Length: 113
Image (cartoon, rainbow, N blue to C red):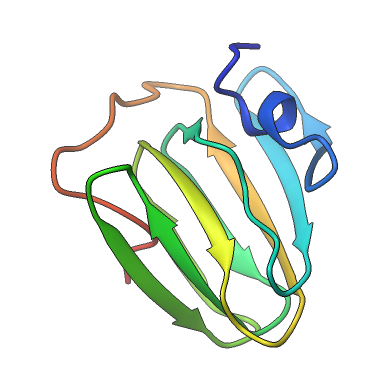
């Protein structure tokens, strides 16, 4: 695990719920106002278990993201921090791919449709 692994940077928010040699599955939970420290995600699929509104930042720019419960989104490899700017708790699952884990894709921030 690197020092930018979200389980290391924010262990109170991220936890590993499954892992094998091909994928790692993280559960994420936060409350309104919570913030994450800067961390890195490899190529991942995100599944939202609750509706949420958050701001994702990479230090130079920010993107506001609002998603309903049950959404499935691709999250290309990236480094960012997050802030729950909504009025509801966030609950989601990240399925991180280990094979061919990409470097951060230039210009990509937050989940993609």
